[in-house]
Length: 279
Image (cartoon, rainbow, N blue to C red; front, side, top):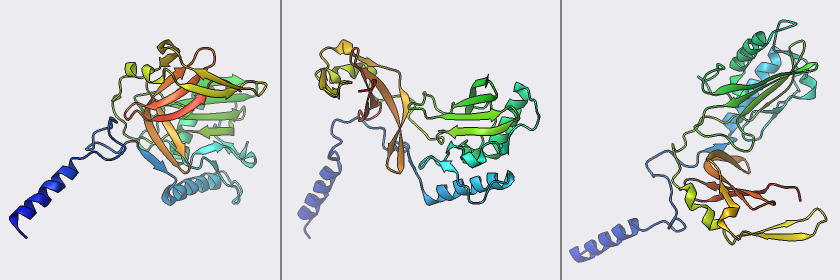
């Protein structure tokens, strides 16, 4: 092969390597040498087996039926609700009656023991560390409700994620629980897109909806003053058996009748459009 042909092939390869990937032209994405974005959470067999083993350990400790299964989220693999058959059979607080301080300590111990099942990240199991923060401890008649919020991320979590909740009886037995905690993942420290640049893209946008009577209606955004960009949040997006975790801007569009739009703060991708009303 002649030197001229070799040089031509080398130059062609160099030019192709510098070309942008189709579909990415004009899209601002995170640096390629950083962590993968967005982080992805899959319900892998290994994670499912670990969750099932954690549930069996709890069931054996509290002598629950072997046939009883955890009502777990299909992706997070954390408890959605306590099975009816288990209500009142898991004693969290050994003292009766108990003080708020004794309740907090008992729950701290319970969360540490069952951290894997509840979705609490290893190393951050103690209450008061960055993982969890107590936000509610209320006595409602014969029930006590305790709620923790996840503090692992530099931004608030959207759509109800990042919550760990317990309902207990006066005797200290668990009646209900729920966990939507996310695993610790690496997200960009700040957004690539400027929030001030986003409202203009929605001017002229039309939204379709129906009235209470079932009549089709349309709403058109006429002015930039109808678009309100909020502070960035962590937005987990569910797609089948996969969860992608995004840094996103919540954007309220409309006056009176409004929609919430989540836009990826790194790529500009529109992640979700949700009406703020019941049609």
